[in-house]
Amino acid sequence: MPKSRGLGDSIDKFTTATGIKAAVNKATGGGCGCNKRKDQLNNMFPYNNSAGTGKSAPKNRVVGGIQKNGIQQ
Image (cartoon, rainbow, N blue to C red; front, side, top):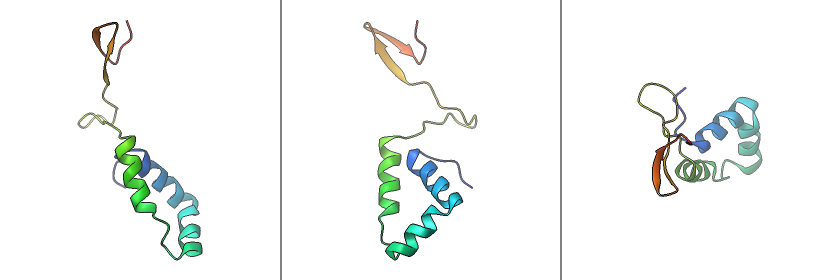
């Protein structure tokens, strides 16, 4: 299974593994908009995986006018 790009992929994997996705597809005839919702969630909440490590890269942020690399000092 490919690595999740964001929250949408993780939810898709969970609903597939638990059978929720199959039940929803059966009930709605497959027109529930799952793929569009998955893409929107991936764009809103991406996992910024570091190359090859499987760990999230620290987010750059500004605190008190000084840029920190994911570490509060």
